[in-house]
Length: 144
Image (cartoon, rainbow, N blue to C red):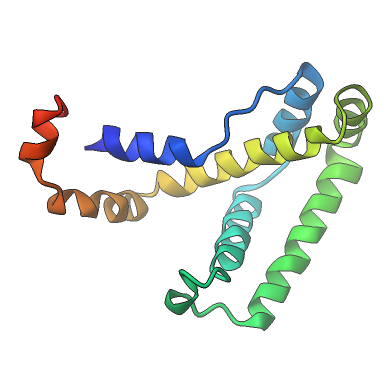
């Protein structure tokens, strides 16, 4: 069943190929963020995703809390781009264009989500749906 969850999560990510300079920028972003930075990033993504009408009813993120998360993200991005990873950012943008921002921060987001997903409580929560699957139907497909 973890295979199904893994495939589902993989489908949510966008496969992209980055150049060497973008790879260096992404590595710097990841290396220059603390566990707290990564947790704050995931909280920010969650708070903004919660604005979608399909899920807004299950979230209680206040506008003030969201604004504070936006301030933290702005400070983090500014620190990463203008201080910690300045030379990597300049090279990536110079040689590979503005897409370097998207691809590098995508890597940082994936690392942050992977760390969040590795928490036992989160993992158990995602595994909970398995008890409702019709195992016979899946086994008929060759999934065990």
